[in-house]
Length: 87
Image: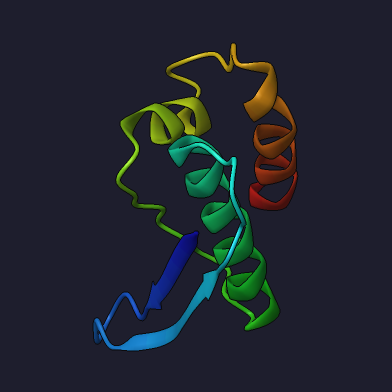
């Protein structure tokens, strides 16, 4: 599954949290991307304009930052969706 938490950057108070059951057969990196996409969508729906993304997966964070290319076919769709909603 994937978990997401949004914090206010000034007060550090938790604004929203959620989780998503993905079922069997998903990799950790797919779950990380799913959490990223869901969290950013929720932040946008709440009117958040500036987002700082943090996570456990250095691979996913470096792919989002452009430091690494996305080579895995199973992650390319997640990456494309994440980049579409982030930018």
